[in-house]
Amino acid sequence: MSTPFIRNHQYNLIKKQADLLQHACSTVSDPKVVEAVRYSALSKIIEAFPDAMDHQKQLLEKLSTLNTAGEFQQYLHSLEPYLTEFAQVTENQLKKLFPKNKKLKLPDLSGIDYRQVTYLGWVDIATNKLFLVYDLNGQLVGIEGKYTPAAKKSICFLCNRHEEVALFSAITKTKPANASPDYYKAIGNYLCMNSDSCNKNITDVTALEKFVHDVTGM
Image 1 (spheres, helix red, strand yellow):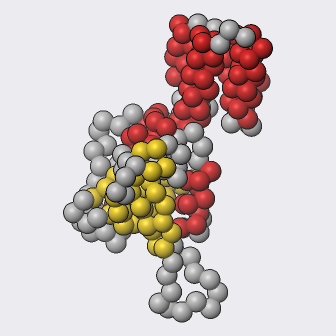
Image 2 (image 1 turned 60 degrees about the vertical axis):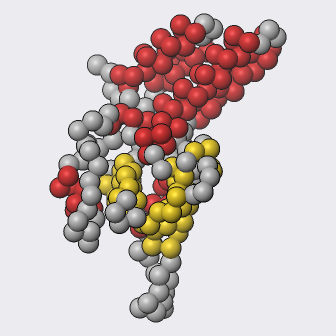
Image 3 (image 1 turned 30 degrees about the vertical axis):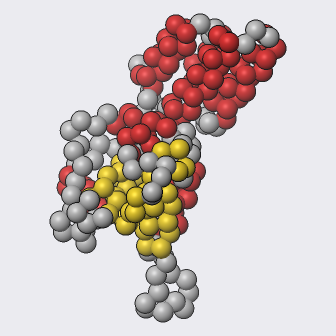
């Protein structure tokens, strides 16, 4: 039985490195260059799994033997049974994450493939708000904030891709010592307007977890 251990962002990283290596195998004639790309790709993948067990590393390291497009496709397909799922949330759970929002507009949960989710994100055009839900160390965390669409494409702070973005601004729940009752601080970052695209591109959760921590204090 396959025990899932690959999170969505890690699978995206594997796909990215596999694509780079496949391109090198098909376009570069110098074997030394190809081997350098192969070594780099494998190193980045293994670094993304610091807690991987030996049999899991062996599964990932099969990348080092691939050369053809068919082999790369088969490799990625072989990893799919090992994909972990984002917590399958219910509408009631989402409402509890945003208790002050009595008219919370919820996303359509029925068509979500939770294996391809690093975070849940959706917008409510009527209230000009963006909502983000993340599983931080086994606990679901909800963040809401205002969003302002950018006039042009820019770099998303989560997936580092050039996409249609909005300035997502959330008020922190933490206050410094001796802060006045009226104190508040907002943290803003440019985030993909389309969370599905962001979830397909994100390869690292460091920025996401820092943002969640800075806003919630968790």
